[in-house]
Length: 263
Image (cartoon, rainbow, N blue to C red; front, side, top):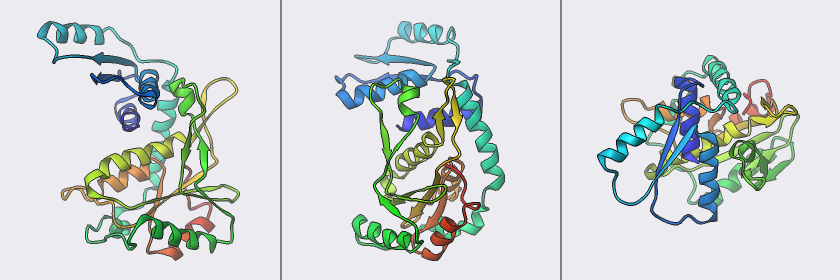
């Protein structure tokens, strides 16, 4: 779903009326899961072109460009893009200065557990100390089937949910440097998709329900010239971020519902 996260970023930064086109080059016959992902892309991007076979000739490239310039953005999702842009403005205002989260972008910090299972067990123990019911592996409904016009009611998995007046969706990440950008794009999109619901009039409306808490085992450092790049991106997507080796801070965030921003 990384392409859809890129679409969100494009519409937010460039504008809801900007034309977003997906050009898909894949000679393989897609399986059922890939077909659903292609359907999601077709129904969220303003236009989609499939390229098959050998690299395109100059004449084909000219035809493609001519077709693209005649397109207009889809109107059915403009409300979503504008709502998300407004959320981003609010998120930027309440964003915690990266200096206060320096431990999260410290590349010397490595996962404190030997494996993901142990890390999840430690986090579960911390969450239960909040005194609230903790649900492992909750499946959460999102707007993904609606925006993608998908046939099935897809749900997103999270690691835990802490039941409260405003439930907390908790995700634990142990980052491998080889796939950090793809992981964080997916995680960002999960926060966005759970932030909205379909209203009675068929429009997508902001749903002030879930809160999103991202617990980091290790670090989310960006490139050397901008170590906080990834941290800013996931916070603006709606995540509250904390290091796993700060259990008291995790409990304080869960207890203080006003502190925790909405997903």
